[in-house]
Image (cartoon, rainbow, N blue to C red; front, side, top):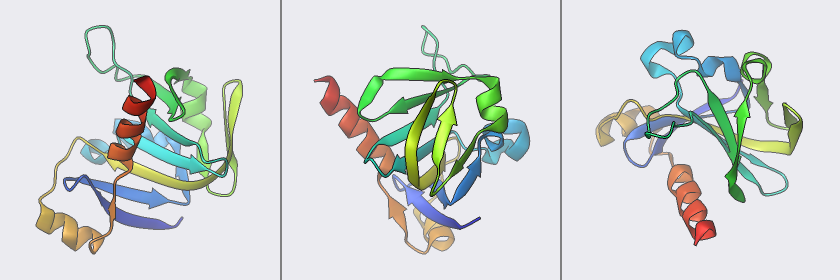
Length: 146
């Protein structure tokens, strides 16, 4: 599994993978270092985000995961327990979930937004590699809603 550490927004640690098993999203698997968001890009130019949904009060629903496409951010798919248990993101392959699928994945970036790092720590861990994937996704979602 190819892995590279990158700084996200100057405070979060992200990792790029060539393969990522979705069951690793569960906190019991990685403790406080569990990933909270997974971004992936496909050959069709789509960008996807796997994240924990929020309820009507804005509270995170900790036992669920959702999937959204940057081009259709309002179209959120709730992933099943089976999707998380057996789901695998692999570069060079499409991602199948529920009754849908993506085109071939070209890049996978996982982010832990529950832990902030100092810029010095991030520099040591990443060698200065950065990504703007979270901001880019947010900017494009806002632009599409206007």
